[in-house]
Amino acid sequence: MIREVSLIIIDPVEAGAFERTYSEVAPILRRQPGYQNDVLMRVVENPAEYLLLIDWDSVESHTNFISSADFPLLAGPWGKFQKQAIVRHGKPVSVIASNDFDKGATTTT
Image 1 (cartoon, rainbow, N blue to C red):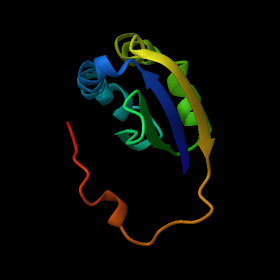
Image 2: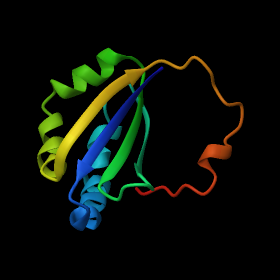
Image 3: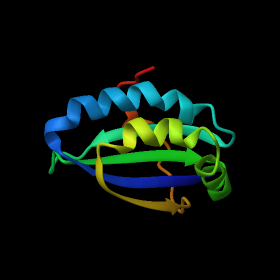
Image 4: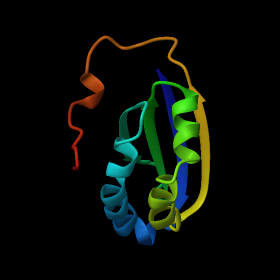
């Protein structure tokens, strides 16, 4: 498993539209080969920043999505909000044994 971690900076005035648009385009992401799960989080300390965490089978699963015909369907509508995005891939070296982190999270479909 590889976790894609993206720090996304937007105009905070557009936060509602940004979040709604993500909910609309996320199904495109979720149907990709190698996709496992995702969570979009607003940074508490800075309302202009979001963290997008996506788990993939491999870095190749993510790069294959980027080069697919589906990518513009997600990036076009959603990417227009982004002033800057920094993307990294990480491999777990330590895992918490409980789901305490997910308590209180909401899911949109």
